[in-house]
Length: 462
Image (cartoon, rainbow, N blue to C red; front, side, top):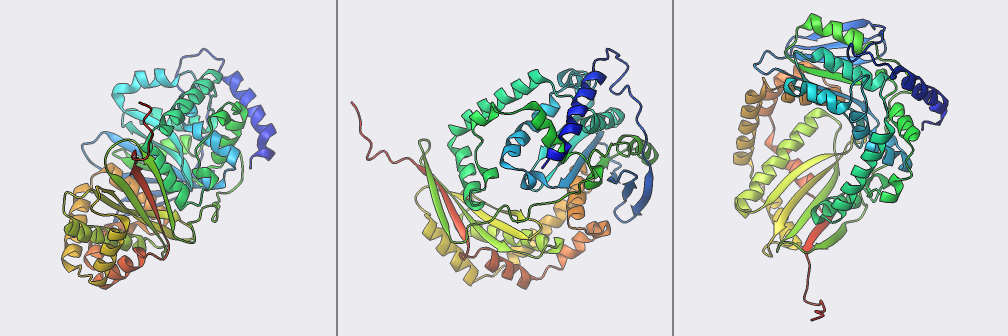
């Protein structure tokens, strides 16, 4: 994936090592940044969101919120993530966020920087998910310029300290060993391995593989993912003057270098759900209950309205089941996208069974509730709750960050954010019923159980 850039990256490492020999303490960035330009600006007045297209191809989104919060939230993302990485690169990706965070930023060490700024709210980190990769962070208004410098340094001048590299490997090794002895973590791993047909990205990392890591190879993986600003959307939400904001993004985002011209992509077929029903279990020595997770797999239209409807459908059916099982019954519901481009979702029910509700009995309950599906009361309760929640969150920075992120992914005009309340009030109960019947079907499902260990056949040496 990154072989053709190896020579360039070796030069980058050498060049960076020279740059960071300076003892100058003038600030985070002591070199000249060539400012980029804002090629176009669009304002969506209903939602008060700005969209900027930069000269280096980056796209920036900004939502100004006049609230008492002194917090500016940030997220960037690009298509790709783990879906485009090879098996060896996945091990590199596992240490990249920690390695970058704990490496030197110009003259400042990660720990020194956060000590100096700990009272002033500043944070920046990278992430690599299944289908997306990017960065998240937050800052106070007073330190927004420093935050932008951190962003720029992460892209253009990250430093890879060999000692920190060793510490991060040791930390990950200890974490892997600890997780292997945690039955609940192993249970989560098993669910993923079953539902993603044991794809190598869902398998546990072998500790031996950590000691075969090469610092340069980790850099190549990082550079390959974070090499072209054109692939990224940068989202900011907070209370900051728009002209000040534009000055900062011209310099710190418009000035990001384009190391590679490769475009964002996604591996559509790397994860797939089992074609026939799967049933797996593991044993543990703690507790006296069994935990079961039933996962259902279905296609859905790749439209934001379809996902909003499914979210409501899952919540309505959850309320129906909880009414039947009682409030004390420990059960969770949810859904998420498995293949965003192909529009497949997995809907799940996860619950603790003390012996009163085995898998067969739970499937019979689902079947009975679907057969006599009266949802008017539950649907009205969920819709009113969602509208009330939305009204409570309109001045919440994180609410807007997540909304903008979602609307970019589904390529929906931002003015529709303000129409969500009206849209929710017009949801068709018949459509919700169809979604419940479709997405809780036994045709393609998996069952994964965490069972209490049966000691009845154990041999007592005493």
